[in-house]
Length: 252
Image (cartoon, rainbow, N blue to C red):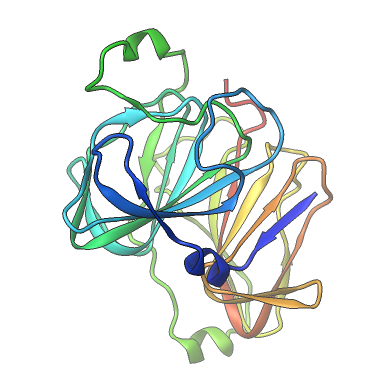
């Protein structure tokens, strides 16, 4: 199945929620799936937007499922790393990260998981977290800043470009991948073979994504399940810059 969501709709459906870690009110919305889950369900994507309050701190924690995390707006600090648009994080399941501290104008992040599993955060500041830890590769990577094109440079681009997001020293020994795809107006490229990995997300970072008679603007998302054929990624009338993020086939 191909899942698609217009990012405008996600923004318009933001609701106030209480952070389970800080107890502070911030805002959240869903692309796909529930906000949190504790059941091990193997199918269906889970993609969630969180908009942190100004100067809010989310304490170190981990999740029971692997995830990519996009930082599309605002600014802050992850551990000792400055976070600003556009940046991408990947972390394996049961791999702690944080604290995540929003700046004075807030910070937005979008968590992407390829299945609905035990995704509720487990905080290192609360008793009993060690009993919930399980073995994993413990990767916790955050990309350098990703530069996007101005509208005319993007629109009149003549060549397809696939650019690795993470630095070359990040040795990847499984099917995991994260690339920025740049396409001029009306251009197209085939996405990865979904059956090779564990499915992949396409995030519209700039321009628009065309397909199925609709145009998905910046902030929109597509998820291609691992049982699907390769997905044709087609730019809209002003071009497209998209993050293409593929999960490993088996993240255990």
